[in-house]
Image 1: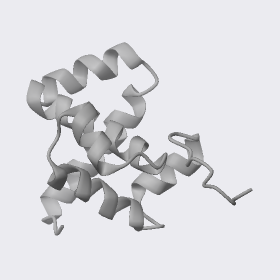
Image 2: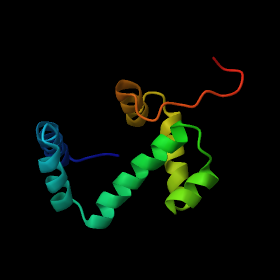
Image 3: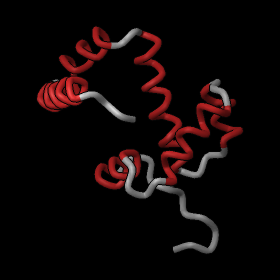
Length: 107
């Protein structure tokens, strides 16, 4: 995604603000509820659930059934997980979220 110079400046400011606000979960939650529409906030939460489940090896069909989401929503998360240098993988590895299940024959 290409951002204008002004959008980049605003994005930097927003990221810095989120980073500072993240030290206070209650304040961050209030900020996000004000920043995003309720539907957008819930979609972000659901997307994170999808990524963690995919990373654990849960099938797309099971995710669709459990979270009541469309296949296209899951596919996007799956594509992002394929990017070894992407943000999802970086967060999962750094903070230990959604560790992969061990497959048969793996140690």
